[in-house]
Length: 211
Image (cartoon, rainbow, N blue to C red; front, top):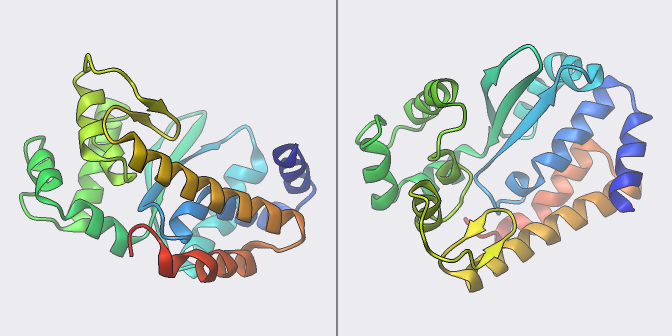
C-alpha cells in the first residue's frame, strides 16, 4: 500500500520534484552506503521521468555527491547506473574481482573511470553483461555461479540469486529493506529530495556495509 501511495504522490509532482524524488528513492541504497551502485530504467513513455532526467536529474545526482553513467539508450528507454565512486572503487579493488574483470577485457589494475567506460561498452555489446553484478555489490561467488549456470541449489532469491552464504545475504537484504522503508516513510511524511537524501546519509552512512 505504501508503494501505491508513494507513486501517487510522485504523479502529483512537477517534473523537477518528480525526477528528484524518484532518483532519491531508487538510489537510496547508494546514498546510504549499503550498495556501491544501482541501475535505473528511465522510460521514455513517461515524459516526467525522461525529460526530467535530462533537465534536472543529472544535476541533482551531482549535487548529492554521486556519479552516473548512461549505459544504454534506445527508442524506448535509457538505462543509467548511479554510483558512489569511492565505495565502488573499494568494492571492485579485490583480487578476485580484478582478475575476473581483466580476463574479460577490463584494465589489469583498477582505474575506476576506465572500468566504467568498459562496462558501458560491454553493456551495449552484450545487453546486460554478467559482471554488472560486481558493480552492484553482488558477492563474487554468486555472480560466478549465476554466470556459469551452476547446478548448485539457489538458497535464497531476493535482490539477487544466492547460491553461497545465505546468512550474510539475509543480513544484506535486511539492510536494504531498512533503507528502502526509511526512505518511503519519510517521503510520505513530506521529506523531499535533497533533505531526504541528506537524512538517509546521516542515518545510515557511518554504519553502512561498505564503510
